[in-house]
Image (cartoon, rainbow, N blue to C red; front, side):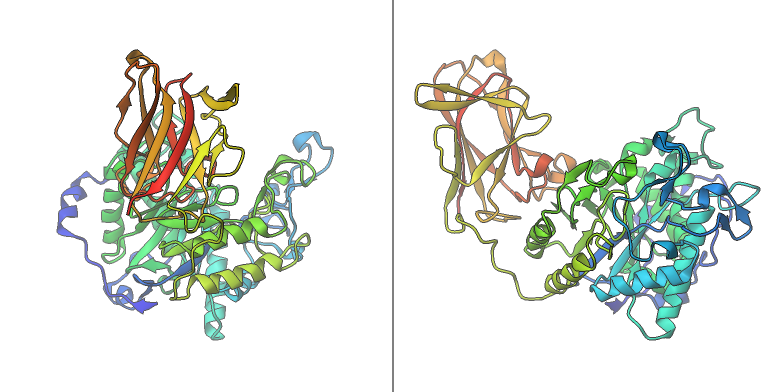
Length: 543
């Protein structure tokens, strides 16, 4: 990590300043806004060439009493640890956790000693950055009786005190970036519920003020010397866009202008979930859900597995969406992260115990996942390249799926909700018949993974009449301008011609990445008419 100087607002952004909302924001809840240029000039930053490991940090737990400073509310007791009496039909409080930390009764978002214990364990695993999941709401930290977000601010203040203690003792600690839990866009605020809709419209002045104010509030609560910066810009993760009633290309641009005004020229480095459209132009993209399907985009996201039985009030193991397979799933996810060019790998999660995605020590797993994380985090930061993933297709020039070949060919069909099919056998031949508009395929990672080699795909199908439509490929690519930031880049379309013969159609796949980023971990999908029959699919390296 290097020292980064003050970042000035580019002149081309100035034209957007007049577009930013003039609606007055409530005061920031913390003391670190505004910042001076002197303070900014002293900030440390991650830089190009660094390899960084982070983790999502959930701090909403509170075992102890029902009070936060002067505010007392029964819902704070056992917060996010037990359900309230009567929830899920229970006659008494019900365990809300799938897995359980050994220090359960010490969990308290308002207690700096609890945060300190978490931070020390995180640092011991060579994790460089925590992303506290922030549920802030502008003007709702206790002002005028509005305290829906008070716990979130109090928890960050306690985290900051823990960081200060570790710093004073000369101990290692992770830097702090923001995870903006956008579900808070549905919360009441001075800018919300005046528009007659539940989802806040981020194209409006009020919506933009709520959005920016939440980001400002987070950074006002954390001492700047502890911030996680990339190239001198504070890191902000954006959760799903589904909670926004609308947004457009001006959202992040105007937010950067307003942030720069309050924080001496600094601009956030935005890392957006994959469902935010290309028009918002985030700096990086990631995908939430790495504990079920790891993703390898601008940022890698890996996790140990997923069991949200606790969140549903059910016995552990009742709702497993991704089995940990002891530790194999987590290790396999990391093995792929080691071989990417992405500068950041984020672990989903440190301690989301409802959904069983945690790597922190637990009664159920001990500290095994913490130790595994330490080993892989250290390996991720090594300068030397890692060898290709092992497997039988390392030296192959191509891989193939064929319905009539019982032997593996390095390519598999992937079952997805929008990718249904049936196998039809006639004599000695078996072919695919589509039952959905898509067919998904996964390529063996020993053949290619996050490749930069030119690729061609050849699809053999039975040619139907022209009116039936076209055939094309949508593939995981490096092209950020493609659909979902390149995860579904489209090839040229090939119209059906009605020859009623088997046809072998080649498709060029420029800028192919093929890093398991599509639905269900697929690498590409065919976009085809329903009822089309397919005999084989071949992928070849063309260099």
